[in-house]
Amino acid sequence: MGNTIGSDPLTPDYKCVHMSNGLTDVFFNVLVLSGSALAQSVEQKQLIVWLAEHDQSRVGRGTVGFDLCDMPWDPATFAEDKGFLIQAISAAKERLGWEKLDYQPNEDILFPCLDLFAELLSGMDASKIQPEALKEWLAAAEPDDPVLCGFPRCSKHQILLTVFGCHICNDQGVGRFGRAAGVRHPAL
Ligand SMILES: [Zn+2]
Image (cartoon, rainbow, N blue to C red):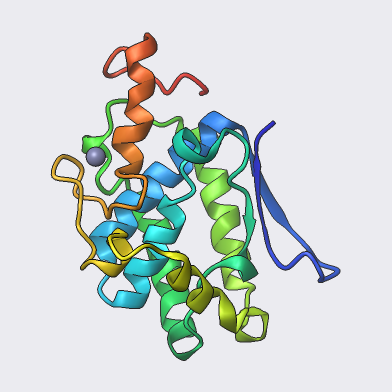
């Protein structure tokens, strides 16, 4: 079990980040926290919402892997948006927003995954974009989807909401089954 985030699978230098299901929750929590705080443009907010939709509590454990070319990049702002995501990864490593989490991520396990994700992004170029990915994703959204409604945020965590709600609130539902506040995420 687990989830894999990869570069373009059709290239010979394919690389990937593989994470357990629990680590995947933490990975998206910290990225969505920093990305929501730093996103300025519509394109950047869309990318963070898309990442936050990889919510295992709603779509199933071990089903949220993806390749970078699957992401809804806007070709017009690709370079800027790639830079933004790399900046969001750096900010996550500086623990931006972590005070809003009810657990302390295990940095020894998490940071190498963030580093590798940044490396994959750095190595991606515009030729790998699937130009239809963004249009198809938006076309599939219902009219009341947060991505089409001005990017509302969770009042508690201030992160961008998705059609599934707040990635962190949903993850914290796990706490009802025995995880006390302030302790490590159960998978770490
Ligand atoms: Zn929340």
